[in-house]
Image (cartoon, rainbow, N blue to C red; front, side, top):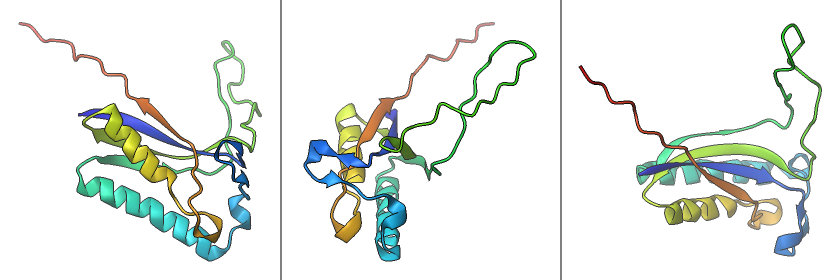
Amino acid sequence: MAKYLLLKHYRSSHEQTGKGQLPPMETWTPQEVDDHIAFMDHVADTLHERGEFVSGQALKPEGTFVRFDGEGKAPVTDGPFAETKDLIAGWMIIDVDSEQRAHEAAAFLSSAPGPGGEPIQEWIEVRPFLEREAPSVTD
């Protein structure tokens, strides 16, 4: 088994799918939002039943970037911020048998419904966890 991070990217432009512009979620009907969230729960439940779900969470669009800028300097900045055309909307951690299975799970997640109930085909970034051997203990 290997762990993968599935990053759920919201992009307001769907040029690569031929769908044109995806309207911002705040313009969706309450039912469309509920259906979308219910589908995310369904994906998590399905992966949990298969023993593959580890964790997941939706994210708010606001946030800050932080970096070390030297001793005695304030670390929090007011930017840069992600452009609205590409925003990480949430993440899921899965533990699966292969990269192919991780891709299958990501494609399932990507089929979430949007406006009108149509799959929004959002981008899901699949990132494997760095695996390091635990240090051996010797007497």
